[in-house]
Amino acid sequence: MNNPIGSLPAEFENTHEGVKILGFWVFLATDVMLFASLFAVYVVYRSRVALGPTPAQIFALGPVLAETLILLTSSFTVSLSLYAARQSRLKSAIGWLVVTLLLGASFVSLEIREFVKDVLAGHTWHQSAFLSGFFTLVGTHGSHVTFGIGWAVLLTLELVLRGLTVANRRKLFTFALYWHFLDIVWIFLFSVVYLAGVMT
Amino acid sequence: MQEKKHEDPTLPGESVEIPLLAPHLSTPHFPARQIAGYVASLILTGIAFFLVARHALPLSWLLAVVLILAFLQAAIQLGVFMHLREGRGTTWHLPIIGLGLFVGLGIVGFSIWIMLFKSGVS
Image 1: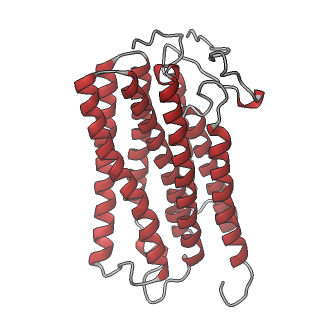
Image 2 (image 1 turned 135 degrees about the vertical axis):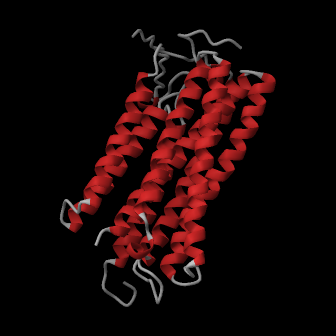
Image 3 (image 1 turned 60 degrees about the vertical axis):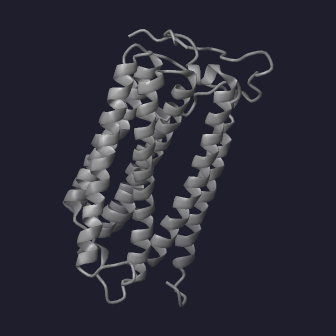
């Protein structure tokens, strides 16, 4: 169970856990294709604004930059959690994981605030093809992050109750993969949806 | 900073079948890679945001540069944070995730390409 520095991380030392990690990569590959489809739909319908607002009229870059910095930081803190786990420092691993899920929660709350503001102004996803594509794409990412927060809460409980067992190390590793993957998706959302949206 | 490299983290019967897919593992004593990756991603985000906020380039160049910066950041996340080369034996997740990216880029790329034809749909 101990992982002295210089040996194979425990999640790979156990063959069964290694297979589960491979399975998680397969899931990530399917998720890549899901988001690619939604990106394709968004890019194709971006200029179809009907009577609704254009991207430049509806996007506020300030909150979006804050969301980006929060998510980048959370990606960093989850990597520190995994790093601590591999050195068998349980408290440090739990601490960074809790920081990660708090940052994730603040990201989601900023995004919900943005969506509520749009909907209250009458800009729902019924209004135009652009808004349909926008809410589907960004909402799918946001629901992934929300699911990730629930996962992180359960993982924190397991770490507190059972400590750094081999199974928990593997779960922390796959959670870190999931979280970094969502960060990559957000980088493209930030660039393709928001930054490209305000370019005129 | 001392780093211990694992040359061949395999058991009998788990040999690396394809040299290109050999795993790379290291356990440094200080999370220098993580910190460097974080700082790099902050800098790249800052550059992209600054260029767009200042309209520092012509439109098509701006779009191209922002996209290149995004792909650079994705590569950092994959390589630095996602421990892309870690595994035991042959790292079979590399062709899997590569195939996912191939199909994904194909979907997006060809959707954009087909819309560039000025027929009724674009």
